[in-house]
Length: 348
Image 1: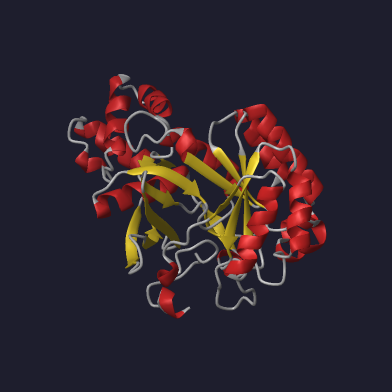
Image 2: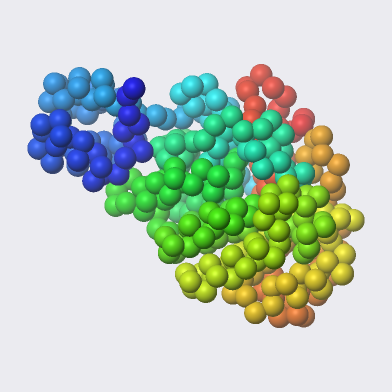
């Protein structure tokens, strides 16, 4: 079965080429073509024809194509529906900030975590994305908009740490010279709380930002919202987060979706502040985004302010996430699997 060439590092490509009997510099040439977004071996015109033909038999170059896109009328946010080589689809969101362009990437086709407020898990998990398919989301969006993406958030479809090996390979490719070349300090990786994988990531000591979807201060509420909490309860998760922050020196970002009447009371704020006391972290409050087929509703603006006020009074750093692309269902928790013929984002 042909191997995914684009998911290999330059060093790995060179090793393969040398084993095929060609000089090492050919590996760097091939990597250069891939970094430029090349999608066909025939385009690699500085390679001998015999090598190009051999590459076709032993490797393939995965990519993504734009099946559909939606442009927000409220801001510069663009949501893409990408089609993969096997016909599966994923969504990705391109956002504009003062510091530049940021892209929210998908790491899986669907998700098996089943969080009660999220659209992605409604269809279950189909498969993992390869490192090359993650990278291709950036390259395709850059070509489409004529811009350079300067930061990445792994917060799209899927649980990144449930696709650990491919995500780690993607992160290493992402920061290689050439290509998109985005450093780890410009990467945020979101997890619903796979404690065993958090410890694995800690050993890598990458200087990315770990964003943990907490969404509740205790096991009773969190288990109702997030099934993963029954496997890794709040106490185990927060212990892993403390150790991660202490080991890497990187501040943990706790994501907290404010859901009306569920997790937004003063008592919840007080309990959350007590749980996080002394940890190198900050809390990112997210006005919950409503999803068709889900019963949860977002907290009122006043409740959001009061919750934030309590956390700040207890010494925590708090931000309120800016809502982007709300009119095209491009906000947190709203990405899902779909085909072109399905109803438009605004009608879901």
